[in-house]
Length: 95
Image (cartoon, rainbow, N blue to C red):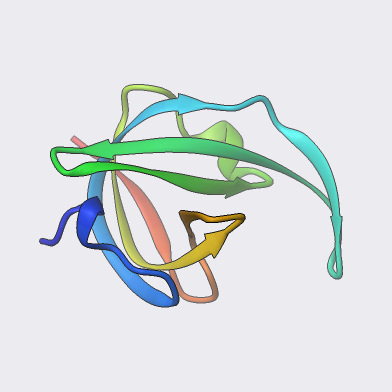
């Protein structure tokens, strides 16, 4: 499986990584209404990337968990790559 260092903007991504930090949730308003968002830092042997967690997902995950993102979406946000679930992505805890 490719590592974080090989990810590029505007492509789907499947990766295994460890959550090393999660920011405090912040309130945002989108075209779909009000929600909460937090940034989680993911790390593997090749690098780090920000994972955007929305709504209930913020409470589902914690620092130190190993996760697998399947079919996530990588985008360039303010000059840095980040990954989100997009329309079809999933995230699951690995044992």
